[in-house]
Image 1 (cartoon, rainbow, N blue to C red):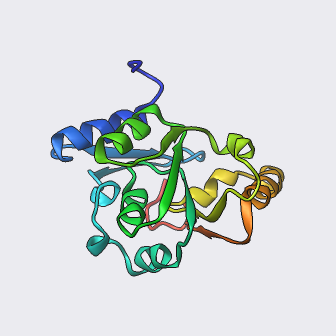
Image 2: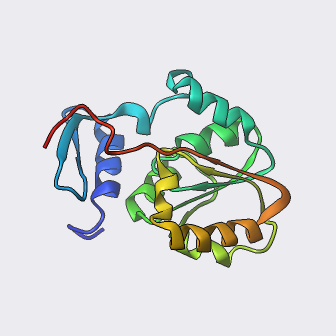
Length: 173
């Protein structure tokens, strides 16, 4: 892996090896706001430690699942354990490596921009958890990606997504 270029993947790999001890996650918004938090264990947390909203989302998944922006693979692993067929994608090489090391059966290095490469009606559920609905960026990209998702999702398929407003914080610049 390159020394630079996949900070997220490097963080996940280090967290896997060190169990997150002594680590911090640094986030920076486009408006210049920067925040640091002690290692967020959510990347590796078990189902029992998930929020009520996350557990509910996982219970709604069915059929062949596409986990977009899978990170360390916690949703993919849980859904696999529930007997679902899961394809996990992320644009971080380190994240995909962590997923494979943790036992995700089908983890692929792929950007959300490339989801159109899947065959039509390949998935029954598309999961976009951990604020991954934000991967749509703006209106035009959202329209384009939603068309691709429509094509690769079965007629009775569903998209389960999570988003947060990064500007709703008590922290000040």
